[in-house]
Image 1 (cartoon, rainbow, N blue to C red):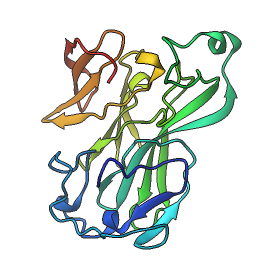
Image 2: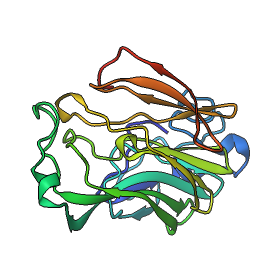
Image 3: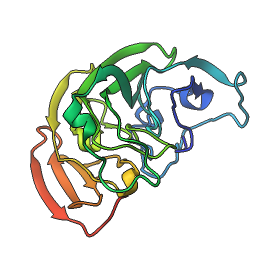
Image 4: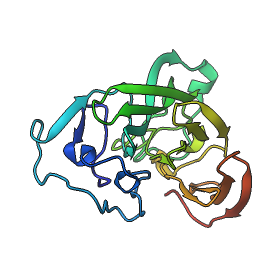
Length: 240
């Protein structure tokens, strides 16, 4: 699956590419870059042509803005992140606060509360298995028009799911959607309110998270079971 195959607020097209094969470990797509972190599915058998109707097994319309959050797959579960704009307005003082930096590329600072969700669909039918809100808040700045507030992809080991929402925290859930832990790593201040997006990776018992922005950028290793910071190192980097 390529990064260009995105889910948007429009109806989702889940191609046969995502739905063929058995549920063996080698056929899972547990992270943004796939099982070997190289963008390749060794056992894949994708179609070479598709359209709105050809080689499409099912199609669903989503409630929120998933933007660049490529789905991950484990067994019969397809999992992604989304940000859903609610009808709730922030209080006047919060709404009046200016967005950080210029808005040459970034959109206007929102005035509505958003729900930040992790969603699990049935891989074979597209029906929702569960949806969990891990944060509900007013985003402190806007984002580029080509993406949204959920430009991250989760990762799983088949027992737990880890999702980074940047300024809205890092979260760990089990495969049934129960929140195990949440960790606030602070608010990011992006250049021109360009937006956030850095998918985590797992190595051993550590979850690696990168927070590159216009403030104090860093890379951190969290204990994947507890969310505790194992180590943290400053980075001389700007908005990623």
